[in-house]
Length: 193
Ligand code: ADP
Ligand code: MG
Ligand code: MG
Image (cartoon, rainbow, N blue to C red):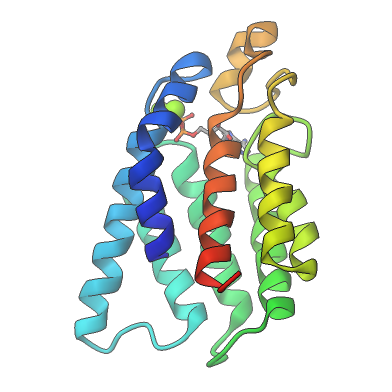
């Protein structure tokens, strides 16, 4: 989560530029505000009882995103992390297979909440290939997410604000798919790949 907050901070302007082209130019700001709040929540919590397990960390991060990000991405990423955290339960440690299964549960919940599928030009275009690849390792998941994000360029958006543009959404990379690739890359760093 701390690696993600760092990457979001560094790439926020690029995310906002992408959202300026096919959305409302707030994706970088939304993500920055959300992950800054996650960083604070984890730090504050660490002084007290602290989230003692990987699952508790993800659930706290997810709750924080839902409560601090007004845009579509807040509830969607928040749901992903809360569901994944819940799936991990109270295990003290997590291996890659367990993490992949938990993230699959989270990504499925995102698809259900937003009613989107692969090819709709959303964050799912990066997230679904990433969870498919994760059992093969963090590097494979990162490459799959980046490829998925790039593959949104020629697509016409069918969900979210970008869909209001119709054919004019073609030719631009989806901001949410781009931030998803960033988050998967941060996960890989945190996972030691
Ligand atoms: P908003 O569109 O409310 O301003 P953001 O700019 O923070 O929110 O996030 C936009 C991103 O959210 C999009 O680029 C897309 O990837 C993602 N998104 C929007 N709607 C959906 C949906 N229904 N399902 C999955 N992802 C979505
Ligand atoms: Mg936006
Ligand atoms: Mg917005």
